[in-house]
Length: 307
Image (cartoon, rainbow, N blue to C red; front, side):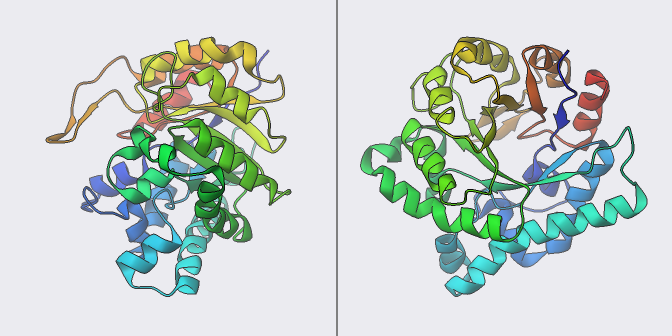
């Protein structure tokens, strides 16, 4: 019998936008709110905890030293503190939540995952969904880029590092190698995928899983920020390449479609909560949502999985 899955949160930026924040087109995306309105970040974390999330993810997906220096006019040491504040806000929210909802048989102690997005998110040109920049960069250059962010998240006390929406193998290799520099840290590695066999760069998802298997620090490998119907065949395509002690992590989008010109189209596909039973059956231990997934969706997910 598979253990009960950890329920992740949904889209932090989605919930901020629902609250009235304008994030589209911002090169820092939700990370800007760490600077302008940190309480709003805590409020979103709290709503996800109330909805049943066992894991809350920091508002650092698009945070970087270089980005904060460039767009917020911070000094590098201030930028480091800003990234660390993402973890501190999440941990404070967990403490506040537990003071009202103690850990019980029905309630795990929530985990804070420090979000690390791909280099393409900083470029702010859509390449986070193609990985095109990998061709012009070495593994060492990608390691140098990611190291400061990971260092800040680990130093601030994140329980896990969520290396997410990764489009290509070279960047995945760089992340796995940087993680070794922080031997006490645990993480998951999650890829953006274009179809039922391939990650966004066009390489096989099964190859991506093999990269993840090189690390003894990963608790899970999987997919995020893709249409929910892709998840089951993607996991099936790579199951023979996954180590037994490595779990699946899955958190797809809601089913709405993104159009760069007009924004999100409210075209709902099969509820991702209903599809989650398949993912659990396939051995996914970490299940949640990404873009356009809100607290109500997480509540429905938790009820669907009977956890």
